[in-house]
Amino acid sequence: MIPMDHTEADLAQVLHTGPFHLALRTAIAVRGLPLQRVRHHLTHRGITVGVTSLSYWQQGARRPQRPESLRAVRALEELLELPGNSLIRLLGTGDGGAGRREVDRPASRAYSFLMEVSGTVERLLADLEVPADGGLHTVGHHERIRIGAGRELLGRESRQVVRAHRDGIDRYVAIHHGDPGCEPERVRVTALENCRTGRVRRHRETGLVVAELLFDARLRAGETHVLGYGFEDGTGGPSTEYVRGFTHAGGQYVLQIHFDEGALPARCRRFAQATTGAPRGGRTDLTLSGRHRTVHLVEQGVRPGILGIDWDWE
Picture 1: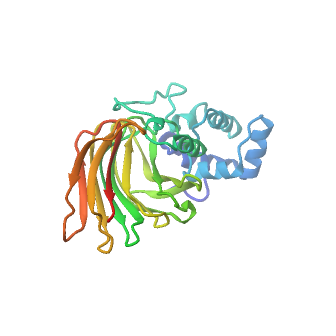
Picture 2 (picture 1 turned 60 degrees about the horizontal axis):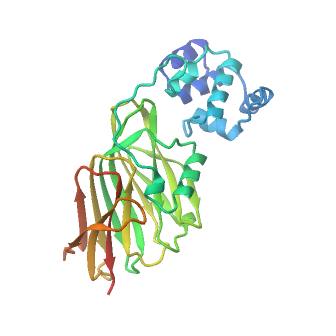
Picture 3 (picture 1 turned 60 degrees about the vertical axis):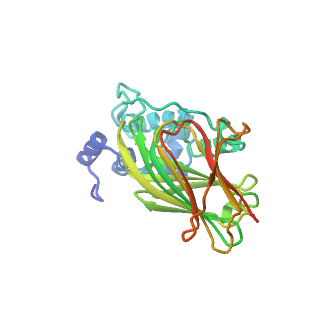
């Protein structure tokens, strides 16, 4: 832990070891600059960064990734009298000879192939400064869906294993798309295991909730991470299906649907789609287990596309 009275030696050490947010916070403290003054100096250099963003950067709640944000980081190196590329290197951007390391990543597909509301998803991700490729792909995913007595989607929980295919990854972004009538402002995000909730963005018209799940350490390319998280909903109308889109190939996916004993479906089926709007194929009837009131599917070696389970009510 860096002591409260920061010294040049502390700064030199954390610039070498990282992480980025701690190095930035230490540098600002050593130079004795309040965030308002930092923002003021950046403005004089023609760079606009809010105090809130600077605060997020030094807390580790957000990482600068956009080109204009990286330009601000370079200006911070000059303003704080730091060696060139010392902060950029800790972001793992591949600049200044740092050489971001990457490993082979699976084949992928854009959100536009998987979701009718892909444009809104991409705008929410951009607001979180999340690149199109988040630097992670899934190795294994067990998802459990709960359907309530009113036939509504009560919530879902995920246990997920992800692997980084790029250095410096410290978060996963989860997307929840509620059923028609969903009230996103009432949907609660829960960090269950090996993560904590970061920023959350909501879009009422589409029922979308996009949430950052922050790790305690940055992953290097090839490293894996296990996390658990959930969304508590219960705000939408009667649910008739659950659909999962996969941007990357590979890994195992298990989907389990649990029904309330007071609202049991007449028939359940699994299905697959190549893209949204394409015909649903691979249909298989699923038997509802009597005592546990669940159906499930298991997919080995997931391919980019869509998998899901739909059901009919009496």
